[in-house]
Amino acid sequence: MGFLEWGTNPWAQNVPIHIAWFLIWVAVIAGLLFLIVHATYIRYFARAREFAGDVPPQVSARLPKHVPRHSLAARLFHWIMAASMFTLLFTAFLPKVGIRFPWVTYHWIAGAVLTVSIVFHVIHASFWLDFWPIWPDQTDLEDAGKRVRRFVGMSAPPPRKFAKYPLENKLFHGVIILSGLAVIVTGVFMMFRVRTVFFPRNPYLFGDMTWGLMYVLHGLAGVGLIALIMMHVYFGLRPEKRAITKSMIFGGMDRDFYLQEHDPQRWVVETSSSSSTSKRAEGRGLTDAG
Ligand code: HEM
Image (cartoon, rainbow, N blue to C red; front, side, top):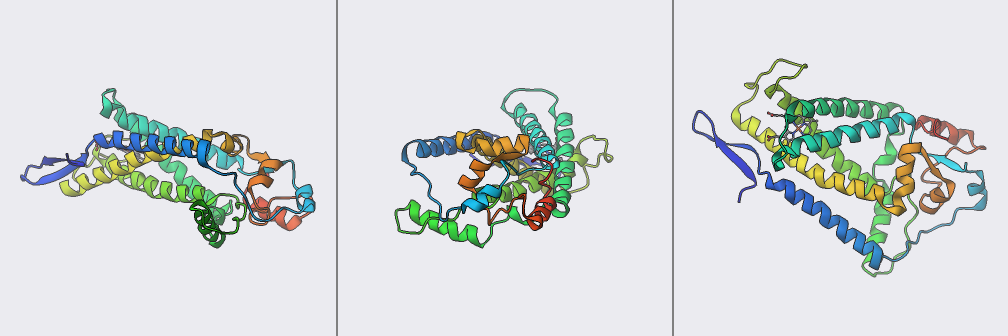
């Protein structure tokens, strides 16, 4: 059983055509296994979380009741990207599992929407939002060490509360960047193989082997995204993460949730009394949600 499907070109060379489609089921089962193992662990085995450091009452008293988290533009981007991502997954994989329809046009249109939305996101995040909170920092790595040691029963002090994004979210974002870039770059070239409104069709742009490898990379990143999106939706629906999901709809989260999970020194929020932090929050586009 091979992971790729091969064909023979007019010069009798063996070239890869695309991934073997059973990998769709491998991704679905891997995603489901992750959900089952995680849900079982949280339900029956996980201990209550402990964090180091209490927030001084004068700091919490200054916080707004509704802590802004995502600007309107950031939320619109998220939901446009989500809609295009689901359209891409369904149009790509339903025909492969027997549900036939003319999928290619819907697929490249959704691909173009995803590409434009990602270009917007990169520019928006680099110049209007704060670029750094989504990347792992020194404290994340130290705390990850502490969390692993406590998980395996070794003694370690409790980790600090999270900055704006927990390490897991930052790592997920990193993996999505890699798989998203892979489908986008290969997808844009693959548009030369079909008829679109963007450029004339040119199936001779690359040789058979290069095209084959491109389809393989597109397919591998695509099936990877099945499992990744399943995990993402699962976490979004989990009761303890609901405040975060709501913030992606309404823009902010309750002060109580913020204080329970986040460290006000690591994620500085606009308060009535601090004009310097207010400037920083504006820089992150946080002011329209409060
Ligand atoms: C979640 C993201 C995506 C997934 C899961 C996905 C998956 C797939 C799959 C499985 C195929 C069939 C390839 C084959 O037969 O080997 C395909 C074809 C295609 N994809 Fe995507 N894709 C995604 C994103 C994109 C993007 C962003 C673009 C464009 C920018 C794009 C453009 C295309 C085109 C033009 C084809 C048709 C190629 C042909 O029929 O010759 N895809 N995609």
